[in-house]
Image (cartoon, rainbow, N blue to C red; front, side, top):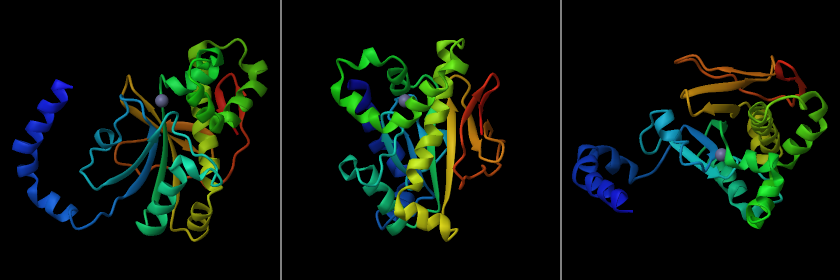
Length: 230
Ligand code: ZN
């Protein structure tokens, strides 16, 4: 904690004064560019990744970057989505999974969740990803744990995009073409981002400075030896 408090001292004495105009502007309101739904993992820092200033991103973080259905109002995710789109008029929603995700590992090694009843309960929202993987396990049987983990994590991003579409405010935004939904994967070791391309059914690297592909359709997922395909 000591190091964190030293950071706060530096923020107060150096960073805040250097950006006083920005903070004065932000004190009046916000106009974030994207709702960024990411995992709580400490190694995933959307603001650093996108080189954002305060006010640029509207983050929503939880274990496994999950989007419960709109009926599940107690999670807070549905309220965050509704507020971001209806009130802040945010034009883009990103669901970002990441490499070495503890939540996804927990789904692959379910016995590790016995001591974590609340995590286990939360991860039921990732259930479709898990069921999908089990269904495809015959094709994936010979794959290494790391390979299966990557597939599950990617599938989970796509499934959560589909859950997102079940929210009326998202469906309305897509229909009116005022909203785009993006599915991304972040590789911690390389710092690389990949975006799900629903035309090709694969995640591909986001080129520097290029706008990512967004998704509106609901693909049928399949595993082949080359990876996830529609
Ligand atoms: Zn994670």
